[in-house]
Amino acid sequence: QCSQDMPDPTVTLQPNWPVYRGEAVTLRCEIQGGGRTQWNYEWRPTNRNSPTSSEYKINSISESDSGEYRCKAKRGRQFTEWSDAFRLTVRCKCGIEVHSCSVWRICFFFILVVLTIFIAVIALCIKFKVNIFLTKGLFPN
Image (cartoon, helix red, strand yellow):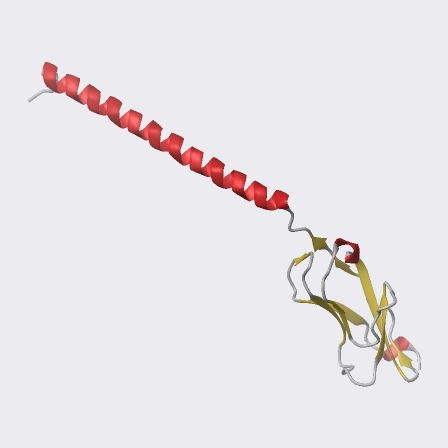
Protein backbone atom coordinates (compact mmCIF):
# COMPACT_ATOMS: atom_id res chain seq x y z
CA GLN A 1 0.00 0.00 0.00
CA CYS A 2 1.35 3.39 -0.90
CA SER A 3 1.81 6.34 1.39
CA GLN A 4 -1.33 8.24 0.29
CA ASP A 5 -3.34 7.37 3.40
CA MET A 6 -0.41 7.61 5.77
CA PRO A 7 0.24 10.77 7.77
CA ASP A 8 3.67 12.31 7.34
CA PRO A 9 6.09 11.63 10.16
CA THR A 10 7.56 14.46 12.22
CA VAL A 11 11.03 14.64 13.76
CA THR A 12 11.11 16.11 17.27
CA LEU A 13 13.97 16.76 19.66
CA GLN A 14 14.14 15.62 23.29
CA PRO A 15 14.95 17.68 25.28
CA ASN A 16 13.45 20.49 23.23
CA TRP A 17 15.89 23.31 24.03
CA PRO A 18 19.26 24.47 22.69
CA VAL A 19 21.77 21.63 22.40
CA TYR A 20 25.38 22.01 23.49
CA ARG A 21 28.41 19.90 22.67
CA GLY A 22 28.75 16.82 24.89
CA GLU A 23 25.06 16.56 25.80
CA ALA A 24 22.84 13.54 25.16
CA VAL A 25 19.90 14.10 22.82
CA THR A 26 17.16 11.99 21.32
CA LEU A 27 15.46 12.66 18.00
CA ARG A 28 12.03 11.05 17.72
CA CYS A 29 10.14 10.09 14.60
CA GLU A 30 6.46 10.55 15.41
CA ILE A 31 3.58 9.39 13.23
CA GLN A 32 0.26 10.96 14.15
CA GLY A 33 -2.20 8.15 14.82
CA GLY A 34 0.26 5.53 13.63
CA GLY A 35 1.16 4.10 17.01
CA ARG A 36 4.70 3.00 17.73
CA THR A 37 4.51 -0.74 17.27
CA GLN A 38 5.81 -2.78 14.37
CA TRP A 39 7.19 0.15 12.40
CA ASN A 40 10.68 0.08 10.98
CA TYR A 41 12.25 3.49 10.70
CA GLU A 42 14.82 4.89 8.37
CA TRP A 43 16.83 7.98 9.20
CA ARG A 44 18.76 10.55 7.21
CA PRO A 45 21.55 11.31 7.39
CA THR A 46 22.44 7.66 7.48
CA ASN A 47 25.54 6.43 9.21
CA ARG A 48 26.70 3.05 10.37
CA ASN A 49 24.83 3.52 13.67
CA SER A 50 21.49 4.68 12.24
CA PRO A 51 18.69 3.07 14.23
CA THR A 52 15.64 1.33 12.83
CA SER A 53 13.58 2.43 15.84
CA SER A 54 11.56 5.62 16.30
CA GLU A 55 14.36 7.12 18.39
CA TYR A 56 17.71 8.35 17.15
CA LYS A 57 19.91 8.73 20.23
CA ILE A 58 23.20 10.60 20.34
CA ASN A 59 24.95 10.13 23.68
CA SER A 60 27.62 12.81 23.36
CA ILE A 61 26.74 15.25 20.61
CA SER A 62 29.35 17.26 18.69
CA GLU A 63 29.32 20.00 16.09
CA SER A 64 29.67 17.38 13.35
CA ASP A 65 26.19 16.10 14.33
CA SER A 66 24.65 19.44 13.29
CA GLY A 67 22.52 19.28 10.18
CA GLU A 68 19.15 18.25 8.83
CA TYR A 69 17.51 15.04 10.02
CA ARG A 70 14.62 13.22 8.36
CA CYS A 71 12.82 9.98 9.02
CA LYS A 72 10.33 7.69 7.35
CA ALA A 73 8.54 4.60 8.56
CA LYS A 74 7.58 1.28 7.02
CA ARG A 75 5.22 -1.43 8.26
CA GLY A 76 4.67 -4.32 5.89
CA ARG A 77 3.49 -2.72 2.63
CA GLN A 78 2.63 0.55 4.31
CA PHE A 79 5.16 3.30 4.29
CA THR A 80 5.31 7.03 4.86
CA GLU A 81 6.96 9.80 2.94
CA TRP A 82 10.14 11.34 4.32
CA SER A 83 9.44 13.80 7.11
CA ASP A 84 10.19 17.48 6.72
CA ALA A 85 13.77 18.27 7.61
CA PHE A 86 14.51 18.96 11.26
CA ARG A 87 17.50 21.25 11.63
CA LEU A 88 19.71 20.28 14.55
CA THR A 89 22.22 22.91 15.65
CA VAL A 90 24.89 21.97 18.16
CA ARG A 91 26.24 24.96 20.04
CA CYS A 92 29.64 25.32 21.61
CA LYS A 93 30.00 26.21 25.27
CA CYS A 94 33.29 27.86 24.50
CA GLY A 95 35.67 29.72 26.74
CA ILE A 96 34.77 32.86 24.78
CA GLU A 97 31.23 32.81 26.13
CA VAL A 98 32.45 32.36 29.69
CA HIS A 99 35.09 35.03 29.14
CA SER A 100 32.60 37.51 27.70
CA CYS A 101 30.38 36.88 30.72
CA SER A 102 33.32 37.72 33.00
CA VAL A 103 34.08 40.84 30.98
CA TRP A 104 30.49 42.02 31.38
CA ARG A 105 30.66 41.45 35.13
CA ILE A 106 33.88 43.45 35.37
CA CYS A 107 32.42 46.26 33.24
CA PHE A 108 29.27 46.31 35.36
CA PHE A 109 31.39 46.50 38.53
CA PHE A 110 33.43 49.44 37.20
CA ILE A 111 30.30 51.25 36.05
CA LEU A 112 28.91 50.89 39.58
CA VAL A 113 32.16 52.20 41.09
CA VAL A 114 32.29 55.20 38.74
CA LEU A 115 28.62 55.96 39.35
CA THR A 116 29.14 55.78 43.13
CA ILE A 117 32.12 58.15 42.94
CA PHE A 118 30.15 60.52 40.70
CA ILE A 119 27.23 60.62 43.14
CA ALA A 120 29.62 61.12 46.08
CA VAL A 121 31.32 64.07 44.31
CA ILE A 122 27.96 65.67 43.53
CA ALA A 123 26.87 65.20 47.15
CA LEU A 124 30.10 66.85 48.38
CA CYS A 125 29.64 69.77 45.98
CA ILE A 126 26.08 70.31 47.17
CA LYS A 127 27.20 70.10 50.81
CA PHE A 128 30.02 72.57 50.11
CA LYS A 129 27.64 75.07 48.45
CA VAL A 130 25.13 74.74 51.28
CA ASN A 131 27.91 75.41 53.80
CA ILE A 132 28.95 78.55 51.88
CA PHE A 133 25.37 79.79 51.85
CA LEU A 134 24.99 79.08 55.56
CA THR A 135 28.27 80.72 56.59
CA LYS A 136 27.68 83.83 54.50
CA GLY A 137 24.08 84.05 55.63
CA LEU A 138 22.74 84.01 52.10
CA PHE A 139 19.65 82.00 53.02
CA PRO A 140 16.67 84.18 53.95
CA ASN A 141 15.24 83.73 57.44
